[in-house]
Length: 348
Image 1 (spheres, rainbow, N blue to C red):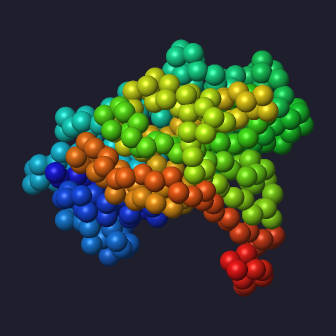
Image 2 (tube, helix red, strand yellow; image 1 turned 90 degrees about the vertical axis):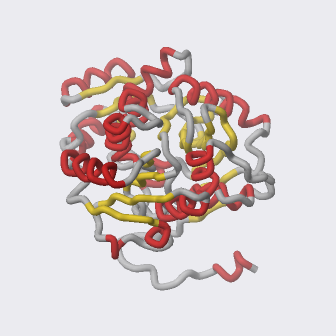
């Protein structure tokens, strides 16, 4: 199978997904905005060919380059695991008549307001929410919902440009920081734990699932630079305490019509045990969470994703062996960390 991989070496996890494609027998054609010499290993060695574009934001140039590639190579799949360019990948699929998410199917994974409307219609509990393109609309939305609220970009990723607002004074402080964001999601702040639910899907069926928790909550971590946050993957995602989140995750996958690949869903577990949807990406998680899943289950989901995409199956035996965690060590202020103290004690 000939696979076009958009941005095969960036962000950093992409290099391993690119290698996975080659390992399961795909001929991988990379397209990126960096010179081929800058594509990191092991991605560069996994590529059968590479084409550089001026910028992924120059869609006409990208589409023209893809047409040139398609004249030389019979492309059968187009894959993009970098969230900002998932719509671009969908446009390429449409242009070439290839399987995978269409533009219409991709929009709910990128536009948080559309995403929540689809899930509202499916009866899935989401935070109360509105979209806003002006400061007046933001204020009106806040008045409807009531404090505290979360403000974040409609088409954002991670916790960038995301703020918890608890008062009118807070709101006036935050609004200038969002001036460059074209459309904002205004939503209810849900009291609870920040959880995740990841899947590897094959033809609409969930072949692998994982549950993790962020400690502390992402917004707390973002607002306090001295905190060293952790991400913790649980050995047994089927434990009863996660049933509400897993059940909701299954319904979300079905409602959005996701077929094959990785998904990363964030959800909230309230003190009462209720599961409240946060958001979902039709791509793998970032921040090394894929590695944690691999460690916890003693598998290689970089290769597992590739097998699902290329062969329509997932055959790796899954042994739920370990709880696994990352600790992202941070310090106060700006500069370069010179040393860690106490690491030997932790590892002893």
